[in-house]
Image (cartoon, rainbow over all chains, first blue to last red; front, top):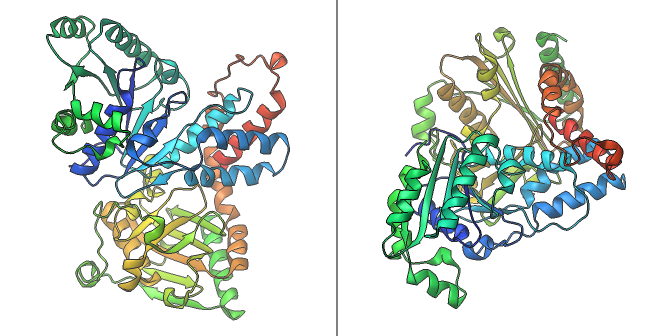
Length: 257
Length: 253
């Protein structure tokens, strides 16, 4: 399969607790199993940075750490501006943890004081530049809408909104779509309904009412619960997992824009 | 400065380096590209080798974090000043390198037909080289260079002559009809040569900077601010201005 857009940037968003990180992990597994794409995962959830555990790849440094160091270097004038500018891409690149199947980069939890939007803008430019070395970039976003109009996902191609079978999370999906329309230039947006069980007609009706296209229905998966309880990395989930199978069935559709 | 003068300066520089006793090898592109593809033990093909070379698989790193490096892609409409198929190596052959990472610079001179800004910009994106050569992976760092060559392709005889040939071959494949001539210059081992080359190539960057000035000015206006640019109430104004300067400096690289 040949990608029409390079790199293809996919953001996984949604209300808290709906399973965004699980879905990101399953998509990563499905892509790396089915295709030979260079895949970059960005753990962009600063409050619940679980993606690294799920994919069993722990970066040594986070973007937040680099941001704090950048600010300290400039405040303390430890290095001249030109040197800092020349080294920032190396800094960010060295924070990427690589494996055979994919690479991972973590935004990290806020450490230092101050809101330096230029530093965010600078790092966004670096991430955009580094992303160009990859074929597909999957961003596991934090809950809610904040990141859509802020740092990491401005140049996103596809927005995948993860929802569970609650009406509240469908309402959130609606808000996310509206915000995304205003702040991003996405080409495709769709909803993954996660942990599906029983009759979900009301949910499907709501999706239609809100003009939200359905990407996939992911059934409740006992294997995921088992992996979670046993503290195992989800990336090692066997291929007979019903949720992984469902994601794999739809992966080609996800990569097309 | 005119392109002709820039290229002449670079040639003079390489000649002087050779006269001073440094090693300069000259190779020629195998114009029968079928030979290159079918006879080489190391495989080449557009979008065929998009692997990431992990640290443990790396046999040799060119440029990178703690090394001197440069990357200059210089498209010019003055086609006749580019010696098509010429590959120059100032420094050591791969088989004589004992370190696992070396200082490294690469310049690619490209003679082109009339082209749009977008097409010229695309010539500078090297993913297709990274994804087109087995066991070879480039990391994009503005103006600097960083790439990994795997141990397995080094064992198969990866050389700078091969790399130069592969670069020319892949450029011709990807930009059919656009490229008229192409020449590749590698510098390794001599840190002073790399530093001097960067100085000599300043004129190229100045040309590019002029071209991008307008773009950068436009882009600067788009930076968000949580204080809505109320700098008088912002407690971080000084650091903010410094970081903005870093940002601009990086854009100018």
